[in-house]
Image (cartoon, rainbow, N blue to C red; front, side, top):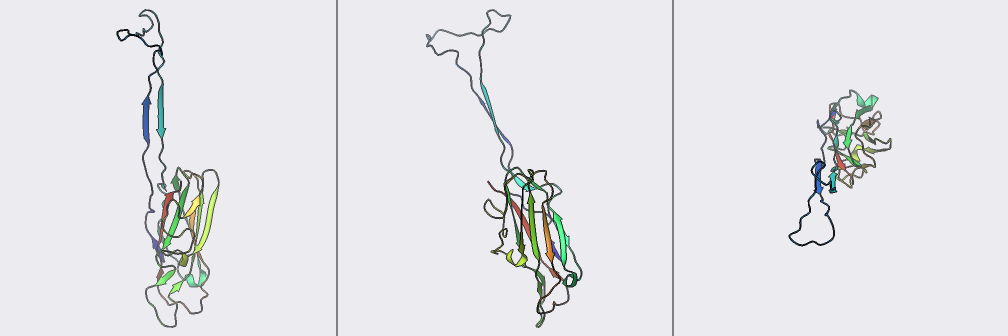
Length: 212
């Protein structure tokens, strides 16, 4: 059995900012005496003049990326007799990223680990983590790594904490797409030493980041 935190980490959340710039066009390019005035009249108030006023409205949407409400991976996976029947569990992930993104995973123990060690018995069982990300345009990214390569400083391509340059890379936005998931698999145990009876556990931490 291994547990994971109830929430993934959110990165680079920012709010919508609106920039309003107003530009008033000049009435003419010919110089006039200081005392001269230019007057514009509305219809019904004399001669009709037209003044064109240009207003540039500019807005920007800051990049954001996280797990959608209800789509944050979390909870506990339990499997009895995993040494005989193995593991095969899938956890759905729902992203909320308006920009390309990266996901990374860290394993606390690098495998399913027993709290005790006894001579002649193994106290750690291997398993694998498959990570898949799906974008709104149908593109996807997927990779699988052994849990022992997901420890801090591990060699897995998506090991560690997600950042703009670390983690499995998804090139498109993913705000409505389904199909993203984290999958835990392991065959029946076939190590040279038998596993010590008892409870085995590991903790996976999943983080997501924008990837400009």
